[in-house]
Length: 254
Length: 254
DNA sequence: CCAAAAGTGTTATCGATACACCCATGT
DNA sequence: ACATGGGTGTATCGATAACACTTTTGG
Image (tube, rainbow over all chains, first blue to last red; front, side, top):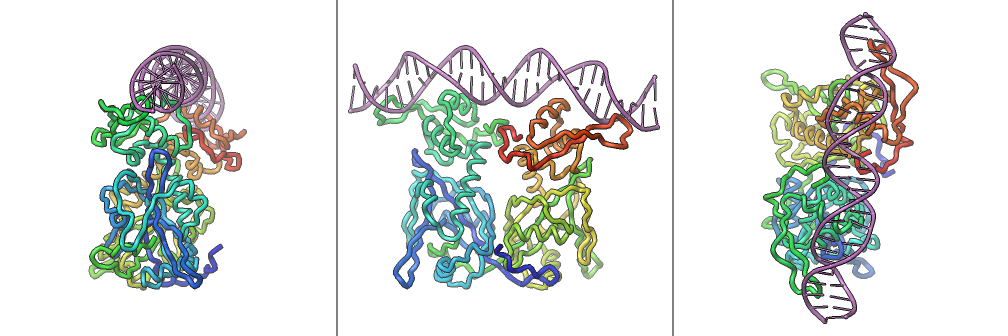
């Protein structure tokens, strides 16, 4: 396919270095929908400015581990530390930086000649209530509805990366639902938890069965507190106490 | 991906490219134990030759995708095509190539100045009966017992990569046992399958329950054939028919 | 008193586990 | 005939799934 180049085996590989970057797929949950954090990218072209979106990411620095680079990217972008972060897949199609628009943008922003970039994908989960810096000197970030990914053409292969991240989070939540607590407010209701669960897994859980199941999670604590200012019966609040959580999940994921 | 957005914290990132490689953790099963395919590495030093082992791997070529590079590595090493291959994790600790012995070897074999290598780990499963080329011009490969990994110091961070691969295959087999068929001969007995399963998951399955469970796998066919030349009642043979297998696994992994 | 969502238990079904004896073959 | 591993069924238990009415609150 993109492999014109099949000579090497006999001869030595070319002394060729791609760049290496990390890209972060950051998810949030607004109580209704799954959100993804994207960065505005504006490219000036002959016939005016062109604007689209991209995942937050960066070429790794010289003495930086991959996890460190991802942590840095998120910290620079949001001002936050201690963000839940999992490496999920690496992407190395030689053509992933092949779009002239992307190459053009890369050279302008990095002031480097960029041949090719291998990128390592990270999943990041953050509580959407955390106040993050959406506007900074060079970037504008915003939460977008996951649904809108289908109709948005992101930079590079970022659409595929985001899709892969979605598959990954589904898989993980099925096995270890405690990931969900990273997306919920510190105190949350059972309904919020269930909605998020069903949203990600595309299921419709039975209210009672869900409650029974989820109350078995170690570290999930019912509070003596209810949600305020609701125009109906106030729901109880719960909290997830990481310290009391066992890392061992039981065979059903809890 | 690249985000020069933020005023790059204190100093700007150096225009720095690590090399990118793939490393393959190749497992086999000899009927008794899990095996890993390692390559002999000999380094001439002032006080004689030093010899150890490494994972098969290679720096990626210029126009090569990651999967393609892994496929190439395995093909060059074994002469085989169509090897089961899954990317599982990338490793980018700046110090992973920090050992002087490793640096030295890298420069000699690649004839390049190598600063740093980010590597993408692949899990490969092969039927141990396939005749592979163990000796070629530059490499000697051999199957080693998985157990012996604990006492062998591999090159670079290859011990950690192999451990991570083991964790990965355990996880995968728990969810999608059909991976096991990649390790078994085309025709195999129920006992072989169970032994392999228990070996990887470190469990002891009940013979009858295992049989019941496993016979639900779509694509697993009982043959009208038994194993020959056994000094006891000849066991039935089974075969896994990929074409009849559904990609959808049921909730218990089958 | 109406609307909206919260909260709560029991039964049925299904899958997982535990368990022991006879069978076929080669020596 | 014996040693070795192969092959088979049932009963119990626990987990998941299905299912509907009453409660609380604000407007």
